[in-house]
Length: 37
Image (cartoon, rainbow, N blue to C red; front, side):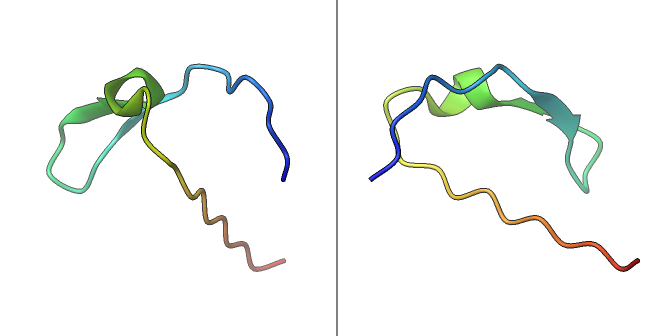
């Protein structure tokens, strides 16, 4: 299992609200990234 301190990231969701990784402190997070090159 990879355990590292995650950098704080703030993004805008589909409803225009700001969402930060700090909002999920103490919870498991799955970051899914997709790209088309």
